[in-house]
Image 1 (cartoon, rainbow, N blue to C red):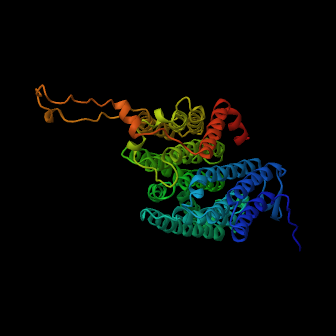
Image 2: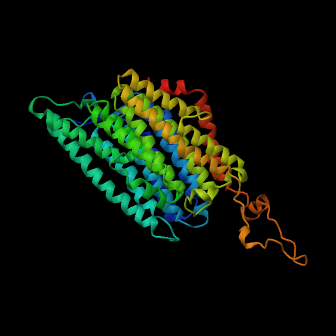
Image 3: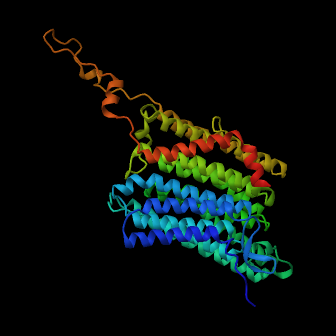
Length: 495
């Protein structure tokens, strides 16, 4: 029996994969124009996702399909494409300076985007796992992809990321195999808890799948790779890990938890993840490591919404959308302030940066406020309120209390970073003990250093590349617009 393939439903995949192939061919043939080709391909992928009719499907067996088109899938594909274009913009200055090979970088990043598209439209466990691996595999190389090796941090981060990812993939595959053995189904719409003597086997399989997918969102206990990998990777790659890669993990987890009874396990992961992430973030002195631990904590809030099953999936989607926008702004500001080729630096390196680059400082405050759930980050505030409301409505009041408590704890380090951006320069001079109590009249006058003038001489104004400023500006504008209409976004994601 010949099975018809709906090529229209596959248009987003064709656009994403075609972009990767186009970049590869251009690199081999002309060695130029990688960035424009990759960016245009990302935009074409977003357009194709919007243009495909809803409820189209292909690779079907009866009523069960391995590729399903839904409004949620289209929205997430647009997000993957836009995040890819945004990270290309953040990476453009470094690629133009030759700090990394542009052809390989753009090819690997568009391959990761292709994996994200597969995750968004996947209708069975095998497609879901293959999509996640296609999303993740290129990132192993991107983490350590540099022409100029200033330290071994990049290679160490890539190896750490690879080893933990391999273990998590093996766990997820074992879980999928046990689910298939217990239920005879791999399609997501056919997943059940199993019955009779196979029910315990199905429960174990579901737990293993959840644990394997939890790696992608850096959930405890598979979280330790995130800070080291983020800090060792180029800042734009860390931005992609914290946004697009995490979004893929959220989609995979949502696909499983809304069909299988994994609430208690996901709730435990949520409590551990948000608590460990926030407590360890309090002690961080490096910017990217702080953002990495913050990202771990944010994953805990998403897991809390997923703990209630199908009723919390829409809330988790909404939170993920708001989170990736805010996280992208934060990493974009780090890229702008530090400049191409440099790591995220220490928190002390950002002292007064908001006064030297006012727009970048305002964008970072917007991102921090949103991640903390405070105004003017209205999107972040609504996201946390939505999670707490969903948990209370589902009878998980204790988990809502844990979310609220952790949100209060997180205020400490978000406020610390924001204060550092606008802190006055430290006074520089000599110790009073070293100055004679009564200098002779013939002594030369003592010069007094003005801290403001000293800062102006030693800390020049941040001259961020225009393409980076444009990317941060667009992301901030979108975040502000979403912040004034969060209920409409939430309704669209939960409808």
